[in-house]
Structures are given as structure tokens and as C-alpha cells.
Length: 280
Image (tube, rainbow, N blue to C red):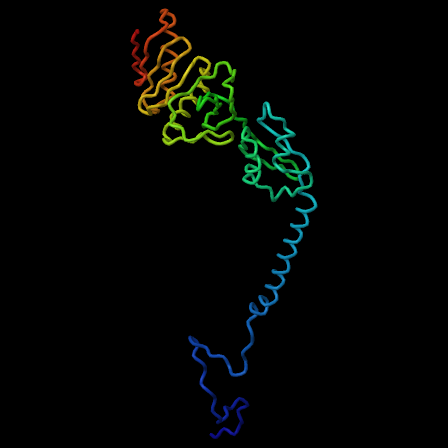
């Protein structure tokens, strides 16, 4: 039987374009729009730059208004007045504490060779601590008819043209091959190893509190360093190695020799664990 009913969903005879490949979808012509993230970033970057600039300006203003030097404390001075050290440092009330440099202050303090800057600490908003050290005289040098006092590093501290330095308990050092001696400068010697050896000896004498028992130090030969005690005993040290052990052995051995009544002779501590004494 013929079916005369018309199908409402009857397909048209017109043709359609093939469906796009689902694995490789292609955009429809005229349907390209800027990505949302691109639109947002275009506005975000300028805002971020403005925010950073505002923060920087605020920090600069805070530094200029709040972080200013108000108080300076000097730590470590003994004989040099704190007011003198502050004046040399160049620090004044109202200076920016943020921009302070320890190296800059150290250079300014070098104008007084008795003082050295160990460190600088800042306590915000306005307090500065300067930790200093005062050089000490540990030896006397006689050169061209003048007496010179030296510190541990060989810095020339003062000169006495009349040879009238009256420091008690300060040993005289001999044997330097001297080029020049200028107050406020390190002693100029042709053999720097002599200064190294000298520094090793006087440092240990100071640490072990034995400087006042030494009459003289001889650094003429860096492989045969020697000391003369106030009691007349010569101490052979050898080179500058193991100086702490050598000075320690010297102290122990001399204390024992004094108990035995020995007042002169040669004590060899080049091998500190096996000191040898020879009577003269």
C-alpha cells in the first residue's frame, strides 16, 4: 500500500560540509577572538609596575624620615675618648643610617693610628654601635739613635729622639733589616718574614701574659729566633712555627729552672715537647 503521509523530518537534498576532524579542530572563519589571559595581562603589567614604583617611593620616604642616626655607642675603647672616636668617624645626628658603610668609617678612623674599627652594627631606627680596638705598645725598637714603640703588627706607634722611653716590662726587639720607621705606618723591612715572626712571638707573649718576663727579642734569623728573659736565660725558639706551644713550654720550663735556682743558661724549646737546658 502506498504511504501518502509526509514525513515532517524529511531530509533535504542539499549537501552539507563535512564535519571537522575532532583530533584537529579548525576555527571557523571570522570566529577568532583574543584569549582572555592576554587581555588580562595587558592590564596587569602596567598596574604591577605602578605598584612597585609606589613601594619604592614609600621606602625612600621612610628611610629619609625615620631611619636617621640618633645615638652612637663606642665599644672597646680604653684610653681614647669616645667623643674623639665619634668625631673621627664623621657620624652626625640625622645621617641616614641605611647608607652607612663600615669600610667608609674604618678609613676615616685610620687618621688616628691608635684606633682600628673591628665592626659596626646598626639598630634601627637610629642607633649605631662602633666596635673598636686600641693598639697597644708591645715592643721597643732602637734605630739610628731613636727609640720607636711597636704594636703587635709592627705598626710604629711613637718615636723618642732622646731614647727616653720609660715603658716598664716592654721588651726590646733586635735584628730587623729596616728600610724606614715612620710613626703611624707599619715598620718597613726588607724581609717581611721577620715581621711575621715578630708578630707571632709578641702575640703569644701577650696572650699568655708573659711579656713582662722578656727583656729582648731577636728576629735577625727567621730560622733561629731567640728571646732573653729578665732573669738572664736565653731561649732558642727556632722558626716561627708552633709558637703557642713553644712559648707555653718556655713558661713551664723556666718556672721549673727557677725552682732549681738556675739564673743563666740556654733553654732550647725548638721541640716544645722536649725542651733542653744547658748551663753557661
